[in-house]
Length: 361
Image 1 (cartoon, rainbow, N blue to C red):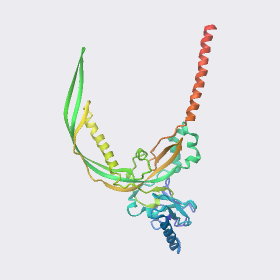
Image 2: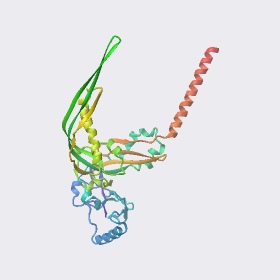
Image 3: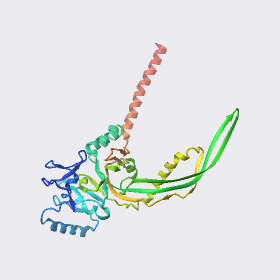
Image 4: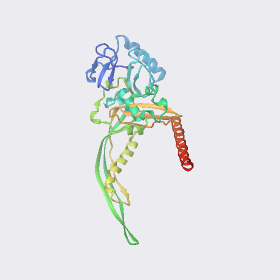
């Protein structure tokens, strides 16, 4: 079943307004706090509908299996098509926001959510600023049609609380040189170095969606985790959402790599005085089993294809941090090249004429 949250006053569709941080009715313009809608979330529908919907669901499940991609909109009864990991979308027929609630239960039930703070208008402005008004980008990159692809998406993240005992030893080497007259004396000193420390990190985020670029998600960090809220599907109304297809355990190798880089950054200042080199000889560091939580975090996302290549823009929907790689138009580059060439040719002719005029004037 693809459900939507209804207005208590008129039963119209509610969407989450990121700018006002309120649930807003598209019909009677009423507004509510998400916490006020506990009894209106995911309604069962009109009397007598449940049997009809269940029969339809059974037919769909029989045809497509447990991972079926078709759901019934509880606003108009139309089929909502979604891929295997979509948790929130829109009905293509009536436009109702649709939460596929059965994909948000059991192990797929998020612990936390951070609501969007930046609405669509602000995201568009950030996009224009990021690509500098399209100075070097293809003309259609900043077209209205392309900007319509900018999507508010809740991305599934695993948040890790983890501790580590750093216990290593190595060799530090310093080198100094003194020059007297024509003689330079180089002194090399060797030191046994030991580092032992207890470290802890809170809420290291790793996205759990295979098809979302990890580098982009890391580039728009950090999120402000003091604004985490207990998961409430009301905040997903009016946005798209993915559910994870990589578990917290699946991502542990990536977590370990990230922690190792954090440890290196942590000890770097204390071994920086060894100006020649520092080499680890023994590493008995231990990274303890992490505690993980599942959270839905807000991202504005746009995909663009140019000259056969994929380009992405994304923005942290809470902090406004942006990242991505914009395509560069070879046509604009070519026009600039010939324009500069033409200007240089005119200047060159002027200089040559002035010089010749000076000689023969």
